[in-house]
Every structure is written in structure tokens, then in C-alpha cells.
Image (cartoon, rainbow over all chains, first blue to last red; front, side, top):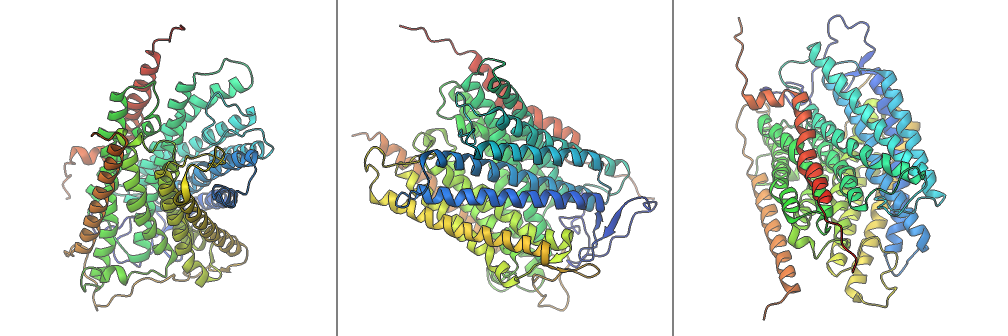
Length: 582
Length: 49
């Protein structure tokens, strides 16, 4: 077992990490030692982390522009876009935000954790080039095809809707390119294990990234299975694949890709917990077991999307979305406890022991790395997690399927959760990998709050509008007359204002990050500027082995469970009201 | 001389990414994909009135 004195990124000792010396006989390895963390940075990996990060930010901006256009169209009072452009932008937004931005940044994460935390060279530059070129060309093909109006099929592109072949080929290129990057990752950790560049178990963050990579393999294989015949059909070479079969396999790509996000996001939580507060996992075995539950069971959640499909039976639906899937929900609740608990233990060890929440109120909330990750954790758990498990219950799903409650849920998980956590990560990636300190730091400090507030309003507005029956993916809800009433319109207005705030938060983030990469002050030869970490109140910080209370986190967990129970039973009540028994 | 400690089976599983990869591919493929595919194949075609 990895010793408890090791933190989530595999460093021992104090939160101020010691310098890691190059391994013996490594003169042929092109790398530098990070001036801030002391971690070795493989220069090959650094190049591809930079390229993938830049492409990720570009896709985030494209998807973000799509987001504001959609928010201002679903806000019925404004109703900005024409009908054809609504579905065009919906397709563009979905693919850039849910697939391209996330995959590019996840490849960057895989390259970083495998090389720096395992102290090994990236397996192959050539493979990395092939991967990134395929992903880039694929993403360009998809975006251009959409913008010229040849793929108004939304992200899911359900058959018999048919797009131009370039659309499917682009997705195949992105999927295969990502699969090649995942191969490069596994080959790198194989070399690290073979060359014994680490002792014992891999650091927790690497373990979490490995879990994400494993899930990505399943995801991308499903993508290949569904997209290749659809591509051939779009060329007119084969008959149309069965639409029900398409939906089954497509969701093996569409939903499972979001489980890659969950795994990567949790790894980022542990990473940022360590970087911002010096937190160490409170129990390595428990945290790793939770990742194993993800690997084995989280992919079954794809079945949520087929809960009202007639082709698959109730046994299949209930097994996959309830019994087996709840093991992955258990894993999320474990992480939801261990991540804040590790921060609490670290803060109490520094002397912030007063009351239940002094550890939390004195946390480095002005550090965008911390606020990004902790707000991500709260939004993901309290909004995304609770709504997700409830909507994934077969019986309740019948009153929520294809309503705005569904995007209300996944904007809390994928955007409020994953994207916000990745933004927090990038506040460290740019200074550590691009070696430039952020410009306009006061703006960077408030950016996570702006983005989080916007996303929460967007998510809750969508969810409440959906509760009143407003359907998702609909250009005009008043086309058949005003059937939804003022409350639904009010909620769409809340979602619209939330969308504006979130877009401003996203734009701020992109401008700050691009501005820093271009004009930021170089930090070569010195540590990056400190975003702010909590200073110890005691002369001697308690050792990791000393017991610290986690009662503040326990109270948060109890509040979470009560919220969960209230929301869950309120939904059963709403379901019961559909069929009143008198 | 440091004595080799015997690893718990669960720890051995967690230290073996290749076994995790196999399990992570096989379990969802069987439970979600293959089972769902079989259910779709077993649908009897509707007869027209």
C-alpha cells in the first residue's frame, strides 16, 4: 500500500515539495525540473501538453459562443436564432463542449501525470503527433461541416437523420486520435513500471487518470463501432443501420465519454487539493477502491438514455441504471467525502481547528485553483449528482425524459463540475507548463465565482423549466400556442441570465489564459507566483499520521444526504401525482 | 534485509492496470452492449394489419 505520508501526486513530506532529482542514467532523457513543484517535466510531453491545451481552449471558446447563442434562443422572450441556425449551433455547441474541449484537455492531463508523476519519458513523440493531428483534423472537419449547414443533426445525430460524410469521418478521426493518445499513455506507464521509476503503487492522481483512460478505451471502441457503419451509410455504400441499435451503441460513446470526464475531474480534485492546501488522501485504499468501482460500473449509466426506448426490456434497464450503477454512485459519494475531508485534515493540521468550519472559511478562496475545484465539487455533488441519480431511476425518468431537466442535470456535472475543475487546473498548468504567470490576477480570482454562479442559475433554470414540461432541443416552445405559462418562461429567463453570466466567466477565462500565454511574465528560473495557500497558524504542522477530525465534512455529507432524500422523494411524489388514485 | 510483504488481492488488482483494463472493457460491454444488442435482436418484427 502506498504510504499515507505520500500525497496525491506522489510527493512525500511537506506541502512545499522537495526537489526530485533526475534518475540515474537518465542523461538521454529530455526533461527539466519544475522550479515550483520539483517534479520532472518531460520536454516531449510538455510540447504535447501545450498543443492539446491550446486546442482545448479554442474548442472551449467555439463551444462557449454556441452556448450564449443557444441560451439567448431558449430564453423565449429573446428567441435570437432562426430555426435552422438553432439546430446548427446546438450541434456545434454539443460537440465542442462535450467532446473536443474535454478530450483535448484530458489528453494533456494523461501526458502530464504519466510523465511527471511517474518520472518517465513520454513513450513516443511520433505517436503523440499522429494523435494530435488526427484529433485536430477531425475537429476541424466536424466544425466546418456543421457551419456550412451539412450536419444539422444535433450532437447525437440519431438515424435516420443524416449528415455529410465529413461529419462522421471527423468524429472517427477524433475518436481514433484520442485512442492513440490513450495508447501512448498506457505505453508510458508500462515503461515506468518496467524501468521501476516509482516504488509501490502509482500516485493516486495517476491511478485516477488510468481509470479515466480505461473508461476512454470502452468509450472510443463504441464510437468506432457506431460511427464507421454510419459513415459508410452516409456515403451510400451500405443500408441504414437500425436506429435502435444506433442509439444503444451511440450512447456507449456519448454518455461514457462523460464518465471519462468524471474520472479525470476527480483526479483533478485530488491534484488541486494537494497543490492548493497540501492535502493528502485520507485513505489511499478507499480512494482507489472508489476508482475501481468507476472502472467496473460507471459505464453502465449509458442505459439512462434508453429508459423510454421500447426495444430493451425493464430488466436490462433497471439492472444497468440502478443496481449496478449505484456502485458507481457509491464511488462518487466516497470521493465527495474524501476530497473535502482531505482538505479539512490538512487545514486542521495547520491549526485551523476552531469549530466545524474554520478549515473551510479559512481555505484559500482567492486562489482560483482552489475555488475552481471546490465549487466544482459542490456543484457536481449537490446539483449534478442528486439530479442525476434521481433522473436515472426508471420510474421517475418517465416524467423527465427529453425535458429541460436533462440538460439542467448535465450542465451541473459536465460544466459546473468538469469544466470548472479543468479551469482551476489550467490556472496551474499555464504557469507550470507554459512557464508564464497569469496576467490580471484579481480578475482571475473572481472568474470561477462568475462562471459557477452562471452555471448554477443556468442549471436550476433549466431544471425547473423542465419540471414544468418544457422540452429540450426545441427551438420554439410557443409554436403551438402559449401552453407553458409564466412560471416556465420565468425559469427560461433565469437560465438565460445564467447563460450570460457563465459565458462572461468563460470569456474572461479564455482571454486571461490566452493573454497570459502570449504576454504573461516568464517564470523561468523561479517559482510561479503563489496564488495563495493557507499559512500555518501553529509553529509545527501536525504530521500526516496524527489524527485530525473530519466532523465539518461529516456535517456537509449529512446535509448532502438530506438534500438527496428530499429531492428523491419529492420526485416520487411528482410521479404519483401523474396517476392520482381517488 | 527488508522482507517482502504479501500484498492483499485487492491491492494486487489495483496495482495491475492491465487486469483493470480488461475488466473495465469486459464488464460494461457484456452488461450494457451485448445484453442490450441481444434484446434488440430478439424483437419480433411487427406484422402489418
